[in-house]
Amino acid sequence: MKVTVKLFAFFREDRFIKEDRELPEGTTAGQIVDDLNIDREEVGVLLLNSRHCKFDKILQDGDIYAIFPVIGGG
Image 1 (cartoon, one colour):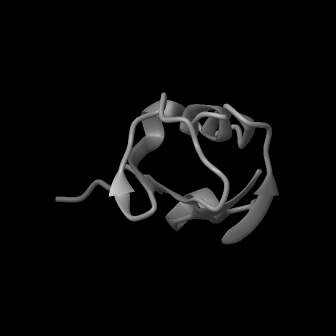
Image 2 (cartoon, rainbow, N blue to C red):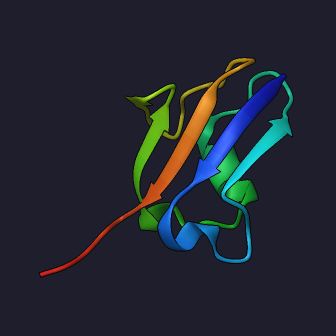
């Protein structure tokens, strides 16, 4: 299946901004985070087709998946 993965903020460093990926059926949102060597504790928001999702969400063909880091400030 084909899924578009978008990265934001410092997750883009040494990676990509947007990439179409061929993935096996049953791939979860968390598996992509792990494959990209992103620490799950650094993830602030996961969006699947513009809706919040969790790491255990199974992706489908044609999905658009966005990964945002935790943003701090003060």
